[in-house]
Image (cartoon, rainbow, N blue to C red; front, side, top):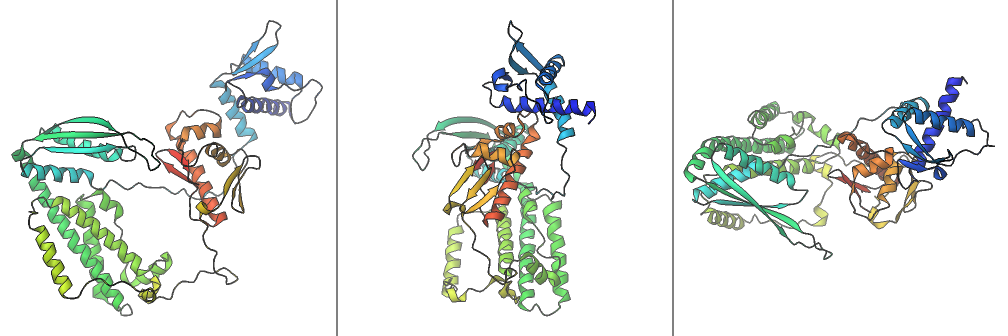
Length: 480
């Protein structure tokens, strides 16, 4: 070993020792010398410096402004003060030499996309229009909780835009209201009231024309999408026949629907939810097999999307008179019931496997020995405890080992010190993982990725679909 290598190895030993002992110190950046625990004078080892070499390294770090040695009148070290950022600079440099990253194949990270808000802005404008038609001012109330704050932010953007155009004026007032949790605990919440005033004639004129045009486009979209559903249903009634006209009609409708949704900017939510049902009708059965879903599931998801279109249509349908709506509903129900179209209860023996509905034999999931898979474990029904010494999480009779002192281990240390469902900010866990406070807002990804990796491993080892940890608003809570 070269002299340079031996010195760097001894320096790395001292730096790691300082970092470790800082966790045991009452003040993290100030370590009493008795807690630091210097190497005994008679101790000699190839894995660490001698007592004299350790003191020389401490003095060198002191002269390089990475440490500050506080000494007594007798020139004895009383405590060691860590000086940042110099200490971390030297530490990180040597860490790359002695603990280089292990290169391995990494699976691409899954990106979780949050769906956009469900047309909150459009709904507010629709309500403003209806109030204007009644020649009334409008009061918008909103309960301010952390989870729903984005909805209020979206509505505020709409109000500020209308105010900027001098179409409305509004004032907000908030008041605290007592609310109670199921366990009886008092949980105060804020309610914000926005009192919106406007000239009804001016506001109606501003809204009517653009919204009338959007209504026509949404009606067209609803018609096209309903026909798309009908085409798929017609195809699966006789899926053995190659029907070129039906497939061509399917492709044309899909193109028209994409143009209506994306080019006309009808709704961010529709953009997020829409997907072409199949690449083509001729490949539909194969795609259902590959995705392991049945036709019923696919058709239900399409009907859900059609329901979102109808919800949007109700928002844009501002000119419609509502007075006779209940009479129309009653007349329609009378007609349906008179024809005997009431819904019958489905008997258990009538339920078929989803994939059998489209004429595809049901998929059989068995292991290599022909045994059926074990039932999924519910984490709620098993005992879960954490062992920091091993370290491992015991789930029933299964043990999920943790890599010692790595991110997952540090995450569990913090989470199992707290009660179930208690939210822990990501920065607290990040500090436990790295030994330093976060200076970059994007560091939350480190904690988020560790949580996801641990959840996945628990699900695989314990054969469960439950997640032990949940991420919400950059905090983590333990569910079980």
